[in-house]
Image 1: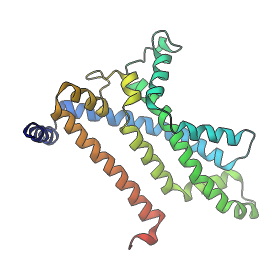
Image 2 (image 1 turned 180 degrees about the vertical axis):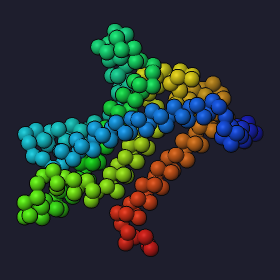
Image 3 (image 1 turned 180 degrees about the horizontal axis):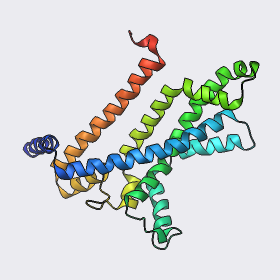
Image 4 (image 1 turned 90 degrees about the vertical axis):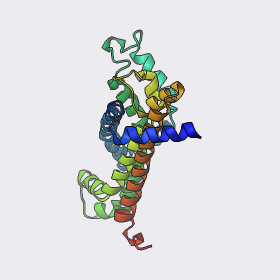
Length: 237
């Protein structure tokens, strides 16, 4: 118990003293996560909107595939990206393996199906609700889609927050493609795994506490958006 208590005290000391190593890991973690979430949102939200508002052959099959991709095992994604960007892989000539860029690519592959499918569910609900109304006034599809997105903007914020939470806690894929290299590709989740195996519990606990606080913050933010903007009638409950 004494060692664990000391590790906790050292962890808080590292946090409140803004330890340079800890700050470096946090900075890279947020940089990779934010870039991956932004790119995934730019891909996933329009794609989910198109799937929700249009009818075409194989639409149901494509939707089923994207929903299946939501459960992609991260280590399989990491292996797939590794094989592509390894020296003998198709894109090995780019030299991106064990770099933040390839870690972002792996994150995008994992997050995009989640954002796409959650967007699809949100926009489809709005489309079914307002479709006949827009058709009766002969409102064009593009204007209708813009209205769906504006009307569902707070739901889409929770979709992006869900993608952020999924990305910031990822370890399986990025440890394979990033290699957990100090001062280059070490992020919170991989650093926690490494430092725990090394017995450096103070840094691992410090990062773990911050990661836990981030997870709590994301969930509180999602609940706040839902109660404040989506279900305002429940505020006083």
